[in-house]
Length: 135
Image (cartoon, rainbow, N blue to C red; front, side, top):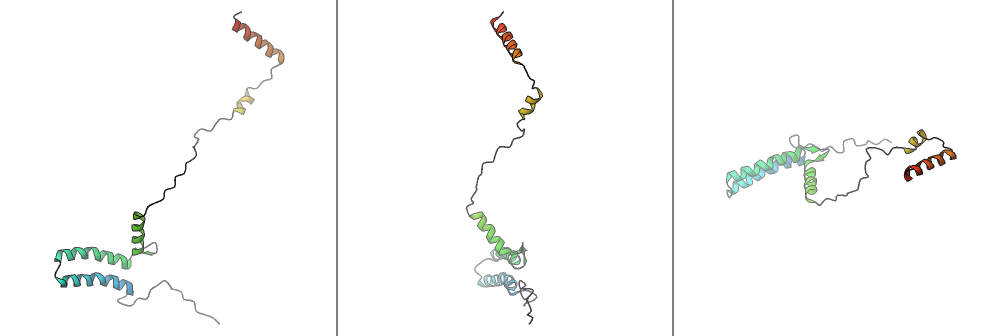
């Protein structure tokens, strides 16, 4: 028996004017807010228009914009939480960076190495003692 596997689980159904229910409600809320506050006649029209200037772009962003596959509301809430919460900074002491590596002294010893006999060493010691004593 074969079963049909659903393919487009993440795609919402478009119901009203080619919009999903959420998108339609996001667009409808600023319109209803304007009608409600205008009908009360308690607020001046300038204040109502200023409120709509803020609400309409927010409604559009909430309804249609996704950032990295996340809804705009989720991104906005995460951004606000990031700015308001305390952050934990971990400081780790970095090791010193050596610009000039230490030279390998063993190379110099090999280059200037020569064998000196016991007799020559004793002669050099006698010369040095005569210079020190001033003779």
